[in-house]
View 1: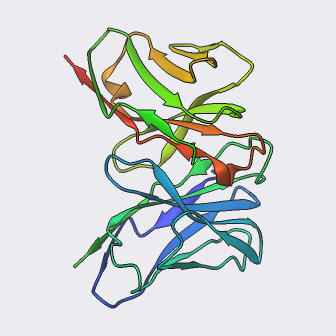
View 2: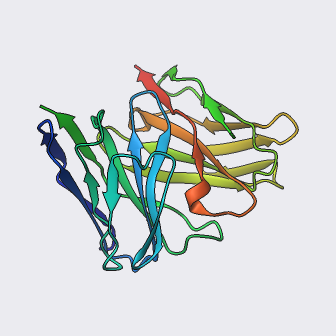
Length: 114
Length: 113
């Protein structure tokens, strides 16, 4: 079955530590996205990638980094510079970046600070 | 910047209809979406409507669009316990780039027996 897999489901970060959230898709989609979800707020775009080896900052990129070395994978690193990292992180993909392609979402990673 | 607004909570009795409302500010919206999020899960696209349509029906779901008032609603007929979730309204503008989708804050629908 095709889909998007995020891991881990829960992640804890110590102060000063970088952590990496995994996102893998086997849908052969070109575009991939990372969103942050806080309680009572809409999704906010962190980074997105329309094609392999290319990515752009979203609305709240500070304190985060990404890579897109393979079409299937778009890992997100939450760096120590992100002072308020506790949130639910969602990865999504779309066949193309344009033309109203449907977004497919992973099941999310809950990141908490120890 | 553009904005999408929804009320945070809605409680309905099982078997009744649920109506979730949304307002948006982008006058160049081309597509408007309803996503469903179950606890601890990602978002699932329920339905969408193109901006030149007034209504779209899909089984128990009816979407109404009032473009003049920039108001979108989702009606769920015969609401069941499995409909308990957060429902997000979202819109996209003229360039239809998924990176430009704006999401509302979500409406948490709870079902009373």
